[in-house]
Image (cartoon, rainbow, N blue to C red; front, side, top):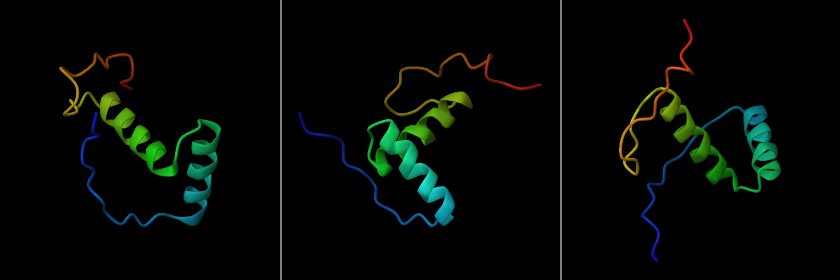
Amino acid sequence: MASKPRKSFLLRIDPELHEALEALAAREFRSLNGQIEYLLKDAMRRLGKRLPDEESPPDVTEHRQP
């Protein structure tokens, strides 16, 4: 099965954040790119935003802060 095409773009981030993301990715057995994509998708879900590969937005009432 072929994977979906990916959009490439340049991301400029603080070197310390880059290091922290690399360490997190290694702990979770992901590539740095895969870790960043995972974190971005998780953030979108927490905001209740529907992603193209999902049927409907999840219930995020437990994640909202007053």
